[in-house]
Length: 578
Image (cartoon, rainbow, N blue to C red; front, top):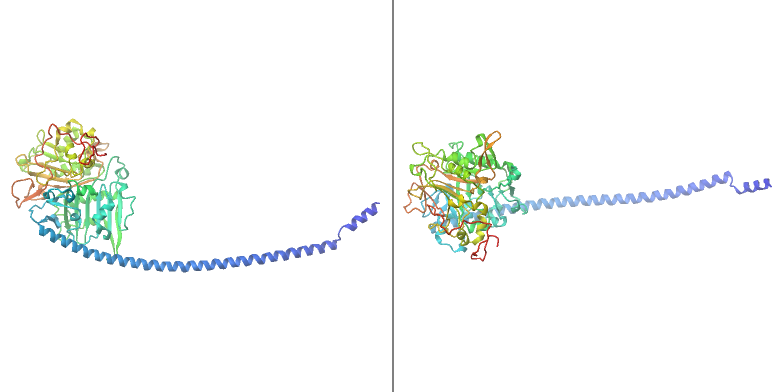
């Protein structure tokens, strides 16, 4: 039985020869199948590689074509810009010539190079009011001795500037370009401004650079602002400096009382002085911008030259005929030799070196401004000491004003309400109730709307002026300051006892021009309110208020910007915000 079962089992198993034959057939099939699959994958890969090579070649050809088109477009654009620039220069020359001829025919005051004037006026101080827009139907005399924006920067220029520097606190960029469209053709325009939101969200033209000057970011100083207002225009052979008080917005330039000063300076020659006091002050002030800007470089396409603008560029010009001193403020803790370089310490230093006639000994001081800080009587006393610095002809220090000799010109509620813009104008006169209501301030206040010469009663103040006038002859001035400084510690600064000695602390950037006797030899400073005829040795100042200032009446209330009033203005408003 076992033998039979074993034989059956043996007969059912394949022989070794059968196993070998079967394995060979299986491997052959497997190899044939694998070989077939390998041949199919290689063909796909080859086709894929071929398509990739074709695509790469197409991309290369397309890139070459686009590059050629870009070059052609760039050349065409460059040619177009050069043609437009040439055409614009021709139009500018025609416009300037036409304006000049028209103004000469009308006998208007035209500001020329060096701040000189032509027309029916004999004064040549370089100080002007800004024109009130004709839409307000003001008395024609309101715009005597006044300029507008274009007359400040364009009307007397027969050539386009190579570069322009603009400084301002507030800027309506589209409005500004509409007033001065020629800026689009200027190779380089720098804008230094005090409010980030005015420009950062805008798409600037390629020839513009903008820098937000925020003291909290640049100097770690809170509550500071960039408040300077100026234009600096660089030409081939001269530079023009314009200092003014208006924000670059429609309301400031057309509806308020503002002031401006301008003068042009030639390139230094072999016989020029290496420097001047104006240059030293100007360079120190502009050097403070290095916290944001050091230099600008560009290619002048019209001249095909590489150009550079920096503070060093400003030193190429001769400022010896400035006729004024610069009084600036720069944020920081100024120590040592720098203690009296800025703010009212600088004003005290400059006035302290002046010689004044005897009639100004103990003469009154006037501070006229459009914003009030948080002050105390101690600071006011120190400020008056700075404004009273100087000596008489015998070298004796002139006295402080007598009691009541410091006079503040600040508008009343009624003067703001009846102004051209009504209560809205008061938004640009930020005097908060907590500061205005201080007893000592009310006792110093004098009315704004007193101008009978230039008819500016209804044009609310945004101008800032400080001066000293003669008691015997109020139209005669010892000195005169046009500036962006309002009455505040932040703007003018204050002396402090620092850890390492005295320091002078300032929060703001500000800029002004000071007329002093030493800058105008043998010349009297008089206001246009004088009844005497102009003399050859006089500089005439078109003040928008009367001297001596008129004290508040019992019923007058000082303007406060954060109060709602009972009587509505002509537009139905009862406050700045309604």
